[in-house]
Image (cartoon, rainbow, N blue to C red; front, side, top):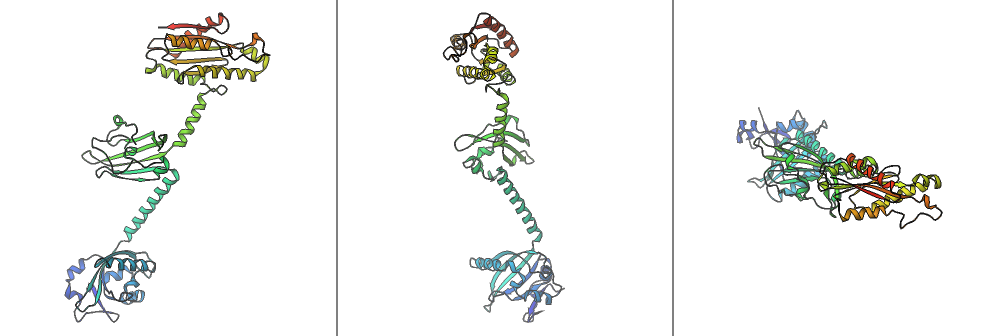
Length: 449
């Protein structure tokens, strides 16, 4: 079988009476993958001198004559027209730096099929001063197809990260290097740092990846090998403000339990979290007065009672508006609503920021103060509140004195370590009954030890 052919005057033949089989063993040529050919390096198109059957097959040619009709028996004729300029420029540039070149291109097949080849050539000048390129080509069509699919997948990931403003990261744990996909700087107004991505240590190995990324809460205790992490967290922007995101990550381990790859993403949930926080806050507030409603107040008080905040004691005040029905009947509900708003604002001004001020319903308010125990502070607060909102700011002159609204307070101070909201409410309600019997703007205090 003839594997490699000499081309003489447009025909397959010999070279000075010596075929290539005389120079290279048949067994060696049979085992070389891909196609082999030689072409002149000193003419414009690169006239081919030798060509193997594998080259003809790659071009879809049954005969050498068909090959010549397609390529003009030239190297440049083998190359797809759309790739010729690029290939010529790349070979010229590479030969300036050495005697080898490596290019990829599509073949100029007559059936239009897309066949990609990897071309490796060597520039040689023979004893007669003639310059040649000795070339091997290998079919890489499948590889190029896979590469294009991979590039398209990467483009999709990039486009999705841009559209969603998500950040994807891929860390090589052994090399301590990583890649970030997505515009981290646009999200957080700063460059990434290692601890932005390493939310918690996933192993005992020192981890300082070659990628700039801020330290956020570490949750080492809940992390075991191979655990998938999915949690809402926040990262600081350049000004230190929290930017909310959903942190999802997974660590791959090798057979001996060492981490090899850490992949994850930071989903952009900031706007959603802010909207939910706003809606949640609105749902917790009384629509008229802006203080907490009954359900939200009870939940917050019960949570405080179960925490360290009340380990030394707490106080609950029940506030009742006197003459409120007469105000509504005599001056209308808008005036009654204004009274409720004024009282809510008054209570808020006289209490601490973390105290719970709530409207329990109708004209009944409650104030809960964690840590407020018997002593001067408690006495001062009671005096301020029982003095009444209208003591210094009287109602309109046309409002009869017997219709002037005022407040009565029933208070309980508790130093017990185990108590419920219902326990406090019952004692404060009893105290409120005592205060109301004493007249207007009165306060009564009970202890629960």
